[in-house]
Image (cartoon, rainbow, N blue to C red):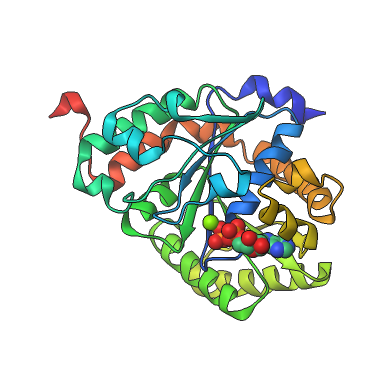
Length: 285
Ligand SMILES: Nc1ncnc2c1ncn2[C@@H]1O[C@H](COP(=O)(O)OP(=O)(O)O)[C@@H](O)[C@H]1O
Ligand SMILES: [Mg+2]
């Protein structure tokens, strides 16, 4: 299968942003279980929690990281030092408060961040950014620079409306951004497809582009319990409906990546971030 061959062709990991318009739709839980599902397929994944002030990857995994992304950036600690390994194929860097506008406050922080990112990109197959809900100014720059955004929504009208607002913001600035849509917490398959179709037809009509379908994920009591127990569902209840669907989703995602040759575009994240922030390289100053 091409999925296993593809590892040889990826030189550095693509950056995949996990975003949503509204909070509480299941983004962080998705991020962790998605990373584990990719791990089962032999992919090495690093999550960087970029949810400003609300990062909760640590709580979902039930592992305390002694340091976080903000400490690392401010103290110039190598990211390798603050990475927490959960399984052989899955590590994370915890979020910290005060990430908001950190990069605008001090451009050395941004330079350090992108330099470290370039290093960790060589050790993993995918880097997942868990963004907070919506987009602050700094995070919007990152969103526009990723290789692909996975937009998580639920079928509920407030979540759908906020998903549309987020798409309006990002497509308004970058019309060709690759966005894949995941409809979470569905009661039946039809509901997921219907939600995506409604979102994409409005986006196509008014924004000139629309997200690709990735998958839907069921509302599952097992997932809720796993969050309470602080053990990711993929580890504690691997046969849960949510996990079975997550594995299918991870396979579809890899096929989507291969189809759109994600790896060919990976080198550009740093340059795009520098451009969006109007940042000069250290030796250009
Ligand atoms: N598919 C699902 N089935 C049942 N509950 C879910 C599902 N996805 C998310 N949840 C619930 O939603 C809560 C919020 O999820 P979280 O990932 O923290 O949201 P976000 O990161 O989008 O703010 C979780 O604690 C969990 O209880
Ligand atoms: Mg979250």
